Image 1 (cartoon, one colour):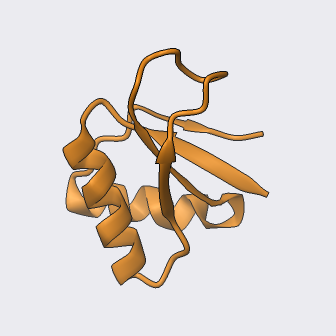
Image 2: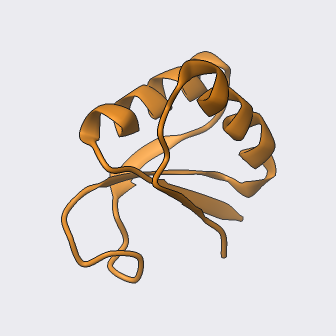
Length: 71
């Protein structure tokens, strides 16, 4: 099952993807799904099972996530 992280800036989305991939996590930049926001923007999709590790990486690297969305 996949979760989505949304961001206020493109820079944060790219930093999120880069740092998570360096840690060996399967993340992918995707467009923000319409059901989450009508605005244009980037989000990252990742396995929900990795959410705690991803939260730790974000805290360590000062990556600002707008919100985490779980199914």
